[in-house]
Every structure is written in C-alpha cells, then in structure tokens.
Image (cartoon, rainbow, N blue to C red; front, side):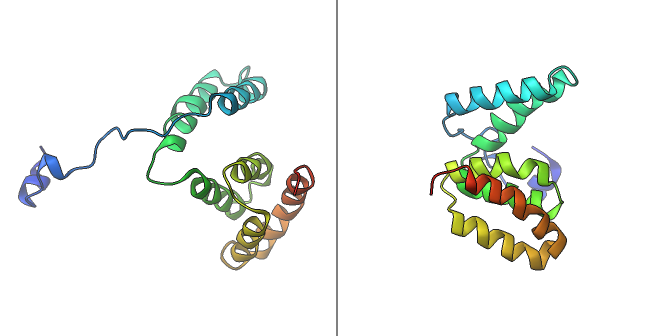
Amino acid sequence: MGTVFAELGIGVDQLPSASPVLMPLDQVAEDSRARTVEQIVGAISPSLVEDTGAVLFRDLWLRPDLAPRDRSMATIAALITSGQSAQIGYHLGRAMDNGLTRDEASEVVSHLAYYAGWPNAFSAVPVIKTVFDGRPE
C-alpha cells in the first residue's frame, strides 16, 4: 500500500474496489450500437471501435454508481455544453430508452442555456426535435 495511505491511516479494506460489479449489458442494444460504430468508424480507426465497445460501453456505462438515466443525462449535458450537436441524437435516444422524459430533456436544454450559453442550447434544439419527432409520445 502507498505511503500516503499509510500516513493517513487508510487501510486496504477502506479503499473502493478497483473493479466494481458492473450492471448487466443489454446485448441487443449493444449489438446494434456496435454494428453502427463499426460501419461508420471501422475502416478509419479500428482501435477507436474497440475502445468504444470495451472501455466506454462495456465498462464506463455499466458502472453501478450512476444510474443509466443519469449517466445519459450527464452525457447529453456534456454534448450540449461542448457544442457537439452531431452526437446528441444518438445519446438523447439512449437517454429516453433509459427513462429520461421529453419534459426532462427539455428542461436540461433550458437549464444549460444559462450555464453553457444560448448558442449551444439553441444548436441542440433541432437535433432534439428530430429525436422527439421520431419517437412515440
């Protein structure tokens, strides 16, 4: 154990597990996502395809300390904040599959206008409208 932990009196038994028990994987959704990423990215960056599956969607997204709905909402907020409108559609659809409602998604955009800026919020609106229009109410 590291010197810092010993100096602070922190024992190994007090440290979190390095590998948490992950939530179950929705294999059907994962297979669909993996096919899409392979088609779009595979010929250009096979390692990006591999990391997207192994690290992002089979590790990060399955960690149990943040519910999938909340993880989706954080992702949408990050995409809107950084102006990454091209990625919002996929992740909003996933967020709604994870339980985020239209009203909650609308409120996220409104809330972010104050923190991420009006242009980023307004740039997200057409993408969000497309997702809403493509889903049953």
